[in-house]
Amino acid sequence: MTVSNVGIASVLSDPFGKTATEIMSYLLEHTADSIDEKAVRKLIKKEAKTKSDEIIEAIRGYNIETDQAKKLKLAHGHLEYLDDMIIQTEVELYVRIKPYYGFVEFVSTMPGMTELSSTIVLAETGVDMNIFDDAKHLCSWCGLSPANNESAGKKKSVRIAKAGDYLKPMMVQCALAAIKNKKQPYFAVKYGRIKKRRGHKKAIIAIARMMMVCIYHMVSEKKPFTPTDYEELMNPQEHAERVVLNENNVFAYLESLGYDSSKLVKRNDN
Image 1 (cartoon, rainbow, N blue to C red):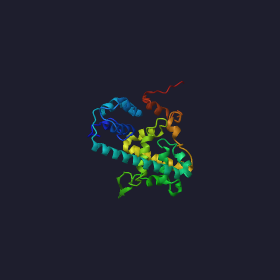
Image 2 (cartoon, rainbow, N blue to C red; image 1 turned 120 degrees about the vertical axis):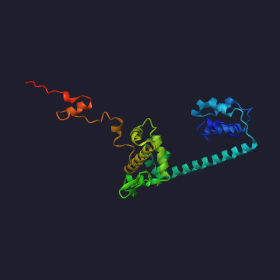
Image 3 (cartoon, rainbow, N blue to C red; image 1 turned 90 degrees about the horizontal axis):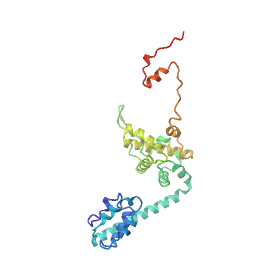
Image 4 (cartoon, helix red, strand yellow; image 1 turned 120 degrees about the horizontal axis):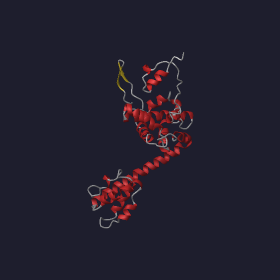
């Protein structure tokens, strides 16, 4: 694409997405003198429409030689083949998960989890949580727990374990989606609190671990996403404990508000 003076890869975030693919197919069938800008604009999808002018400018004056055209067609055919294999695999996955679809519905109620990601996770873990001692055991099996690297009573590392080659990346992606969920900001709130203390990477792993713990309970208890601290986390003011003031704590309370209790004088009504 670069050799042929097609610069859409520098404009679009995904040079192999639907917009880029359809535009490249159009360019292969036309020359720079015969392209219709209106026809090209119709090929631009969704969010990419805001970059329509930049896309048109990026393909202006392109020149695809026969050898480059052959390479592009072969690459395009290979991508189509891979997409077809992925679709076939996903269809087969849905067919095989059908007897356990109720569990997929439970897991997919959690922010960040789609039906597909829930299916993939359950395909790895299974739906019988009795094989794990507890939720911590499941997290360890998925590689989302800190590795136990301790010698002579000293911890050498708190990095997560190397297990979970398939599930760990999947859960990290789901965690990233969960913290961006505006309709259900449960994990976004938790992520914000952890990030202040531990940074982005450790916060994301922590969220992924929380999500796996939730999956353990949703599957084992056969219930949708209902964390026990949801209401308390979302509405902290309504669940704040009311403090009853008395002679023992009133001074501490006033000092917490910025008052100097040492200047208070007890009134003698007698």
